[in-house]
Length: 121
Image (cartoon, rainbow, N blue to C red; front, top):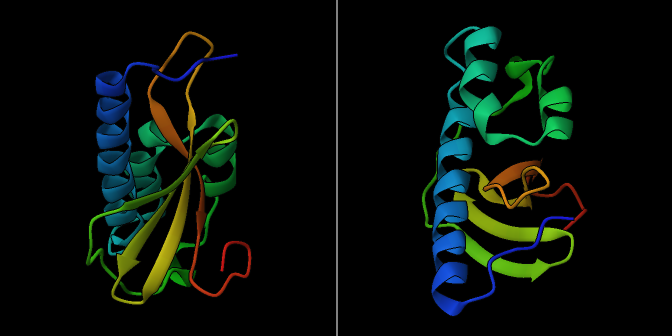
């Protein structure tokens, strides 16, 4: 199992990198004015394998128009990964990140929950 960074400086750096990933993913998520293939290609490098499977065939016509309006806020860090809230023009999304790989890779997005989904409300 991959272990997250343990020193305070390394941990803060991991949080900062994860927050940048959240912003990137949510910005790309809302950019549905391109083809589905282009949309997925922009998201794919930032997604876990499970998330890649889920979003590869997503119908992007079902994604509402929106944009990121705030800085992601870390709300939990536990054995399951990191959970961030991110404010958008259509409400607060929840983004779950997990460590990539077995040797201490970067945090990647595993799940995107829309406002009102009920899972993290």
